[in-house]
Image (cartoon, rainbow, N blue to C red; front, side):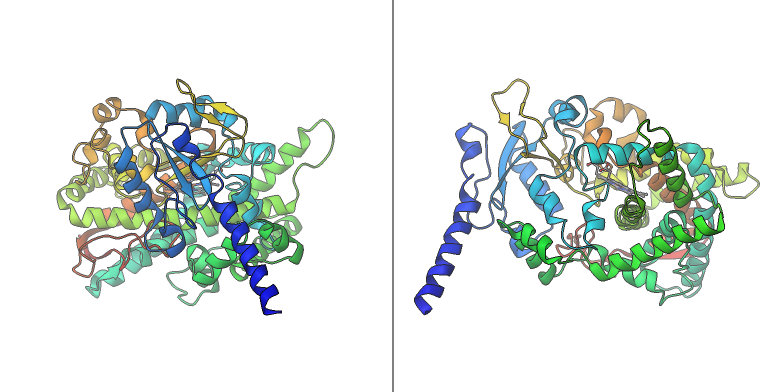
Length: 510
Ligand code: HEM
């Protein structure tokens, strides 16, 4: 009996060993500079040990071999190709996009599938592939036009007013605070009121269940990692699907799915219109169905729910973090803050002391430069992927990519490359002056990605961040705090790039 058990485990180990190592050496054979793979983790032990954040790994990998236009590596057993050359990046993201339409390979996409709750992750715009992605992306693209965002600005402004009240309280108490504890509420309430039709009032209602459920959406733990890992081994995701297992933060996902479903039901039954993202999504789906000649309904309620849910998943923490980095770099670069305050004060003065209008906020030049520099300095997402969807030969080389091969754009490395950004360790908004931008490829800035698969919410995010910055800097000066750890190290337990110990500061009324 024990012998059989031992043999069974030995056979499983051998199978796993073979599965992981079978592609090792592929890039080396093609003469590509490569970060060699080792069983069981490939080129990066950090993936299994969670000892370093992927944003830091991408940066270090880029620095090691950045002079080579492509660099091979292995993620677990998967051969991946880093793309370091700007022309090649442009070719993959834009020119030859029809070969790289998908973000994830089939393993990764399947890893999102499981039971009835996990399906909302599997069918999100970020995960969808091929024609299904195209359909969803083109249906919902019109919700981010200027006219529609202008209509939504009133909701974001209401949230901004609550944030100002909270900052007034903190200023009067002369209290140090972790920036994201304030900016995260702003981004959560903004996206919730726009995409879910419901303002959780996070500043007033500290025990709100909306806030409690949003916080863990990006937080990993070892149980989650282990379960996710089992979906990458042969038959793993098939077994999960058969058993109907939900591992993608099912409690929180169900909570949000139920809220969106109720909001939809309410809109349909009451006929109420609020001109928010939910209304616009309902509208987009109606237009899509009406324009179809076959009379079939293309999208169901679940597609809409997944899309509203992805707005929260993709838009909440990214924007809250960006605002938090912005507050931190302004607090530590007072001369930049003072210059920005002059620009913002003038815009308020020209509007009789009131918040400037949509067009003015979006066109303040120095504010735009400061936010771009913030996202260059540190981006929530430090690397992008594209999966090859049709066999492809990298132009000017003999490197052949097969369907399902993955390429990586190492954002965190490119953003710190002195060839593009002189003195990259210095926070310098002049990196985004007209002249500086004209002197380098636009593909050197990738905080929102690029091309048809780039961030669909970029304009919405920029509106949120700019509006919040105007509200804050017109009324307060942001000061640094000794509570911020001296060195900023990305938290490996967080999917996005945020720092261990947080970013602290305080505000002073002006
Ligand atoms: C400062 C805030 C944000 C940052 C830094 C950010 C960054 C990104 C990046 C890097 C990508 C991948 C792009 C690529 O692969 O080329 C992405 C995709 C995406 N983002 Fe954002 N994002 C932000 C805010 C938002 C907001 C507010 C929303 C929604 C309201 C949103 C919705 C999405 C969606 C749906 C995708 C997937 C697009 C697709 O696959 O077609 N993002 N974002």
